[in-house]
Image (cartoon, rainbow, N blue to C red; front, side, top):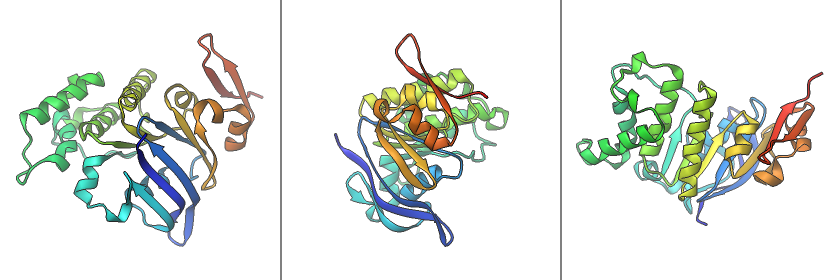
Amino acid sequence: MTLLLETQGLVAGYGPSPVLQGVDCSVRAGELWAVLGPNGTGKSTLLRAVLGALPWMRGTVRLLGQERSAWEPRELARRVAWVPQLFEPAEGFSGLELVLMGRSPHLGLWGLTSERDAALARTVLEELGVAHLADRPGEAMSGGERRMLLLARGLVQEPSLLLLDEPTAFLDVAHQVSSLARVRARVEAGLGAVAVLHDVNMAAAFATHVLLMRDGRVLAQGPVDTVLERERLEALYGLPMEMALAPSGARLFAPRAG
């Protein structure tokens, strides 16, 4: 499978103190990686460093086989989509207009969207179950609705690699499941994706691989079935955990009460 993202010995952070302490990871087409770990351990920092939004101190980052520094921003935006954790101003735009912003890297000199662009945006909105937001003004949307539009905007870019920072924040359980299910469906069709998540069970249900991070370092990484184990999660979060098997055979994790 095509190697879409590779970091080697990545050290990055804010100011003189690095957050990431030599992170190695590789993401291929057809893989959905969930990044799990305590708050402040460097999960979002990893994605921001990969994008170049945060300079790294040491190490290398390669995207789609090319050094990160060699990419021209517009060309990179055609191949890599970013779904941020924080909302951006939405006032004055309809849902459809917000999603169409994802087509910007593909537009011509005048930046005008075509009928194909609009049709693609509406198709993605329908796919995510939020077609009713197409004509709604941004100021009339909830946090969860804006979150779904951020995902739609990323998918409309038609990227090879999708990076998602807490994509299920502000979403109810039904929309958490639907959004991750749609990302997984795209992954099975050849997309590569990395998602920072906080819900271990969502990671177990939808990811193909997991990267466990603690104190800026990789604690473990690999296929979900081999890495997500009770002992590793206890070491990751520093608390006792329980594991149970659902009738379907899925493994379920929860902190041990008492």
